[in-house]
Image (cartoon, rainbow, N blue to C red; front, side, top):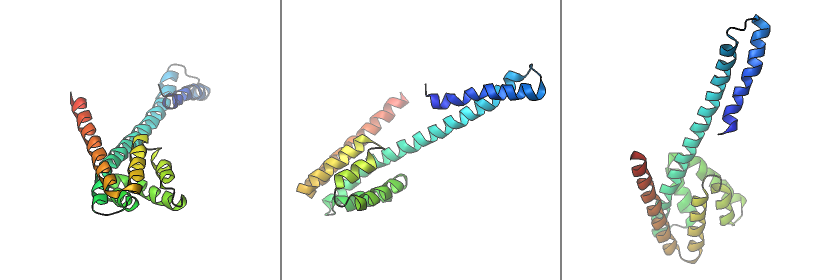
Amino acid sequence: VDLGSVLPLLLAVPFGILYMMNSGDTDHVLLYSMVPASVICVLTMVGRVTSERRKRGNEQALMDSVFDIGNRMLSGTNFETSALESMMLREECVVTGEMFSRELGLCRGDIGEAIRNTFSGISTEIAMALESIHACSVKDADDAGRLAITLGRQFQNRAVARKGLELN
């Protein structure tokens, strides 16, 4: 159980005390103390669920972009440009793409660190995949493009399998 979501229920005690001090009535103290605390609890849970959904959508869009990165690299574009262009095309990834662009500027050529700083908080799996693609691109861009396409297919196949399992 996530205590951060349940913690607002502790507000029922001060709400109950305030109600009893103002009205002196004990018949409805439970109702008037629990309802506001429960509403606050639900609101905090909705916010967390929404942010988790957004994070999952961003992660899935990044997984989809790995395939596109590979296609771009096979057509002759370098890793950094391919990654940024691919992320900027997807609405869910625009903010992440901007973060990655800033990190590339801050890390001054250490692209591996820029990848870790940007993507580790979103998905360690994506961060490792992009680091592998980048390391491969240093030696051979075409091989890196093929690696990215293969990883992108694996991500897509896994997503299809998960959806199939969720439906059953």
